[in-house]
Length: 102
Image (spheres, rainbow, N blue to C red):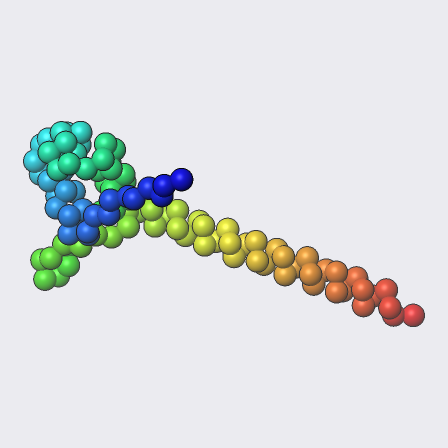
C-alpha cells in the first residue's frame, strides 16, 4: 500500500489566503480554485485560525476562539480521567486498610 503524501502549507500562505478571503470579496470556493488548494481547506483554516495583529502592526495566526475552547475541553477531560482514576485507587487503598484493622 502506498502512503499518501499530504500537501503542507506555510503559516505565511495561510495568513495571506485568510486575508484574501476577508478582503477580496470572492467566495471561499473561488479563492481555493485560484490558489490551487484543496476544496474546503480555506473554510477549515477560517474556522481553525484567526488573524491577530501585534502592536508592531504584523499579523500572525492564532487559534480561533472555538479551537482554543476545544483544546481546553480536551485538556480538562484528560485531567478528569486522571483524577477519577486516582480517586478509584485511593478508594481501594482505604478499603484494604479498613478491613485489616481488628
